[in-house]
Image (cartoon, rainbow, N blue to C red):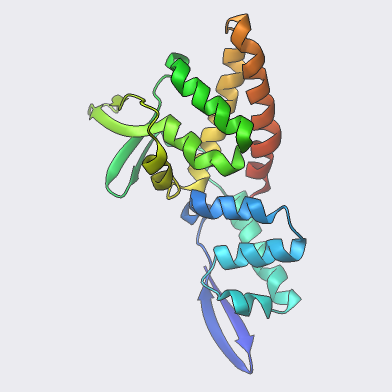
Length: 214
């Protein structure tokens, strides 16, 4: 999407994102963080992150132009694809979402619990690195297996920052629904912790996911 900005009597064309699928997880984290500041700073960070307009020029935009750009970005946010892609490709490597969350290990669960407790928004790359791992085997029908979990996710978490924010949001919705259902059948000693995770997912992250780019 292109926008024309007039400055000193001259018009120049800049590019906005064409769809929310162009937004990476790393960019989305910056946008979520910007929501804690003033509306002015939020708009500035949003436009700078989702376009190639120089940040200094963003500060010099007329309020009318800011309103138009933010409206266009808001419209894109409302058109997000909510279908979860369980297989993604980043830098030529295929990663698959955990094929059966009911088979999640105690080690995986413990790390997920820690990331959520410490602040889900800032730990989203780490959470995705637990849920998405390199595919080790895949059939023509789409059935796949992923690498075993060893807790060594530092490098993969950096890679997950390139993941589509759109798919991250879909993953969180899927994971939250799993937590809601699975909490009903889990042994009592874990059910309470699952309830805490469910509540935090609902209040902290899914609210942001529903806000789009506004």
